[in-house]
Length: 145
Image (cartoon, rainbow, N blue to C red; front, side, top):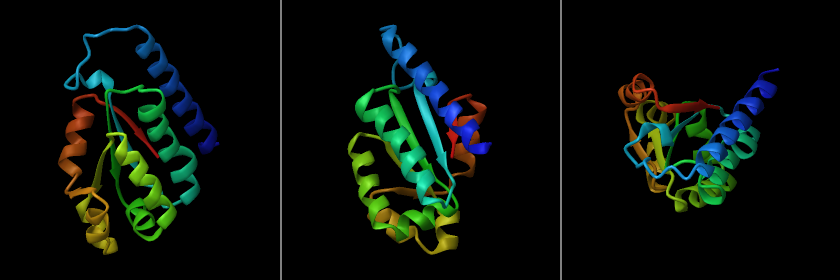
């Protein structure tokens, strides 16, 4: 059931993105939160990473340009998974090359002992609680996996 809800959420986001992109509204800029997406990736499941998080983030930016800015936040078990999985590391390089901002929760990464590995991948490792709270309070588009 959770998977079905997650899939429907992603599809809805994609439809909204296509609709917004097709309007040709040039009033949106990088400071306009309505055209910015925050993706909070918390799952330690590789299939979720590949088939949901990475696929949506990469396709939204590289193929369809659905969002002006996308920030992928690596939080909790996802930090450990990424630090240990070469295939996911290769995919994250591909995502980074599209201009997606990559951030990781330092507290989580420190708990798993992977902060240095994430930083070596070009991921900004920083304390994220306040920043995530600010995104939520400012009503940024936020999707979690």
